[in-house]
Length: 216
Ligand code: E4P
Image (cartoon, rainbow, N blue to C red; front, side, top):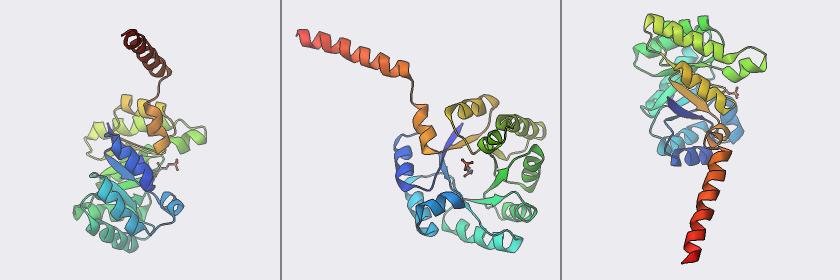
């Protein structure tokens, strides 16, 4: 299971990277807009921190526009993955980018049929959004099971990148299903470490140890 952080915030990326468990980064136009910085400069900063796949999303919605943006981002560094929305023009562009050996992440996937199309187009990653499905009372994790099963049935190499993760249980469920990657906000990565029994156990170990050293 690969761990990506879903943010464009440099401090969060630095902190997650320092934990030693970070494999990559995903951004989207909303996350980048929140930072209020030039995207190109932001990408340069991220590339210096993380040596792994970094998703940069295009904002064009037509084939030529998507390809133009994609080629510009891809030329920056081999680790840049082009994030493309799951629309007809987007998948046409993914097919071309795949032929050009440019890695892609097809985003805004909400159904197994969409995921099948992305795999047929040759996408490197498919990003199904579990949290946004849960938000409309549809089990997002069922979608992950279906996509993993479909890809296994036909031996598609497209990696299932579980997105829109809201809590640690999403990661656990995605791991049990066998998804390839989870992209998580920093707040979720942070929560993965926590367990009250760990805190209580450590406090007891340290206080018992102190009793011994105090005796000396
Ligand atoms: C995926 O790549 C998106 O950046 C992200 O996971 C969306 O998450 P949200 O539904 O919490 O906005």
